[in-house]
Image (cartoon, rainbow, N blue to C red):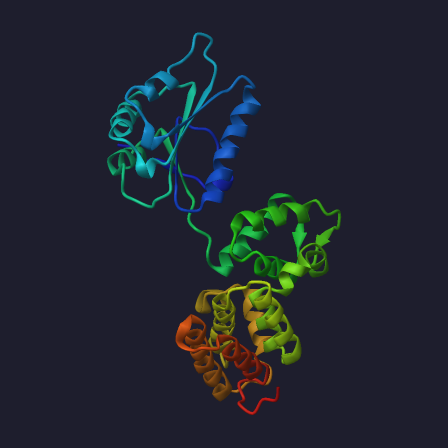
Length: 330
């Protein structure tokens, strides 16, 4: 018994059977688009058929995958395999035993259920198949790696500061982040730096939760409060703002007094560790402990434990701007 080859979404290419798994829809779309483009570049007469796995009727796969009179290549895209019909499971298993040489079958499963497990297991056990796993990109380190790879694949450079600003500005939507990378790559500058990111996306960055946190941790209480108020009045959710503070202070606590802190020991990118060390200037261990407790209090406040969560947030901003000392001035 063989085993399906594991391939990165960036290296997606046609194969007899391609299984695109995982919850990150944007990466899955990129992989499928790449496969389609490869096939079209080889033969402009490519036939493309799209099916919904939940609506699949018996015999459809055989009909669509069977070679035509003139042997034109075919691409069959089957989406929603997590909701597939019994008929697709049965026909898919039969097709695996004798796939068409002129056809590429792409099955998309978002991993939200175990539906179709028998078919999935068979695909993963076939040496004719390729699996492209599209795991969700959540961590800052994963977003940074994504941005870096986007620029590297285009033969372009982006500075650490610009990378961070871009990741902060598009923290919640990978598709938007990718679109922003694409727009920046169209800029003719030799290297993309923070000023260029600010030129394109400054307004978005300024109201971002991390921008508020950066200003507070830099001791710029007035700017941090102004950014916070602007963010909230333009509809920003206060919960991610507190989460941004928590992430930064948590990393500062890990780095504090640890000159050997590294990406592997604290789970952060080198540039994040460097930034945390800079943010620690003027902080004491007691101040960090106070900040951690204040963040927990603010988190509870913005989640409904207090009547005035904005006041709790502003109080937190002032505390952090004063390096964890309570005797702040408004």
